[in-house]
Image 1 (cartoon, rainbow, N blue to C red):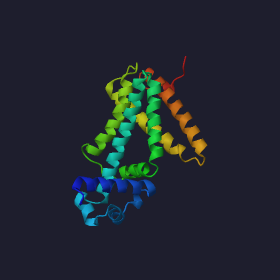
Image 2: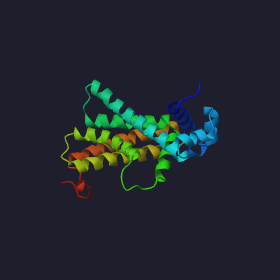
Image 3: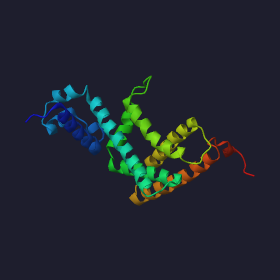
Image 4: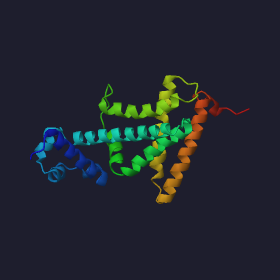
Length: 213
């Protein structure tokens, strides 16, 4: 029985994600997808304008999955009555690290795809998914006892995301798995502790260049 459009699209994206995760962007080939899906190459292009369209759709699914992982981490802490901001931020970082480990090819490919995306004058559905990830962090910060305004809170959420991402990226450059885990864990814990201390002082970090009394 022939697959309908939705089923065919789902099959194409599942195969495309597996190909990207196995070998990065260069492993995404229309002919390979078509062969594995049992459809023609033309059928793929009836669903998506081009391979970039396929990759973009895969990335949207990945971002949705990452957002779900963060929300699940927060829900788990809520069930256990954990409200401490530090623990919640570390849980979000842990969810991110776990996601990166589970997607060794497709997550770096997503980041590479983002770097070559054209700059748009207005946010699109893709960027909105990124914003939703930042909002999870901002919501945690909003519940902390920080004397900061909304703009600073949003900036802080993006800064923390970028910082954790940088730690994870550099951590995986280590050749030893043990060192990767140790380095990433220690650096994230230090980052979150220092970050919270800065927010407790108003989030401006004006004190950074002064000598403490």
